Image (tube, rainbow, N blue to C red):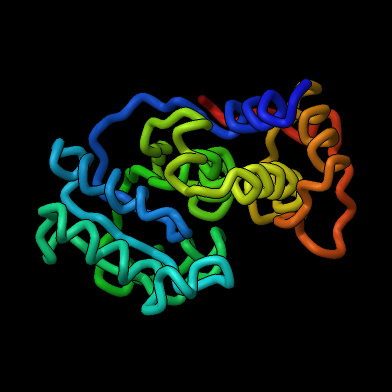
Length: 229
């Protein structure tokens, strides 16, 4: 197996391939990837939802790119693409995926808005973790995942840093069972092929986005079963 073969296995594991459908709102999760905002704008123009909530403060990996906060820059990009300001809300405190949903829920509740369905928009390799998180923390919300459709090679070309993307894939894979074990996400099955690819990439040193102080070993199967895909 080559590095890219193993990275492809992780890339495929994290995408859920939910069928797009109309929902009450979209929730765009902040990150280093402006493609989240661009995909949200494209879906809004298709009439998939009337309101987009962009959520995210800053992280060490985004502060230089989005100095005024991820949600703020996402909102500006969506407006550049023709989404009107009154169809966008921003939640600017969240610094992790759990907070993305908790703070967005709090924001909407405070405004008397109680959506029953949502399209969760994330970078491609965050789909599974984002969906597992919203199912745990906001179980009454009927959610689907969505990302801009890209190949792994195409995504690397967009980001411009192969090692960074592979380390992000490895880190998100580790977070699947870490966050489930901590009660922040719905448990997911981790198949043997994914486990082996993850382990090989860790052994080759793609460890820059692993959670510090946590064992890197992967279970062959996490508790529970896969979320619906």
